[in-house]
Image: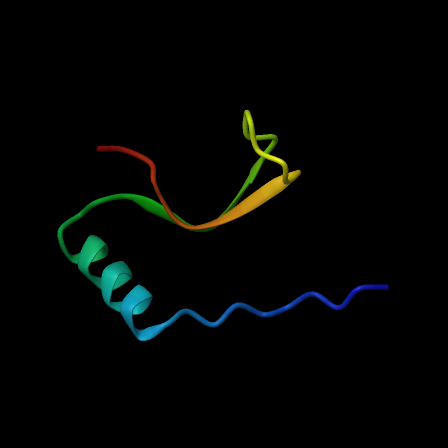
Length: 53
């Protein structure tokens, strides 16, 4: 059984998260994206996904 890794954001990622929250931009952190077209991997983990622009 695989152990799930705990992700610890970098200082830069924490800064970006605080900035986006301060100016009111909605986002999702640590978003899993499955079955990307033309990608050899089954899924990718994105650190930030802007939900609305």
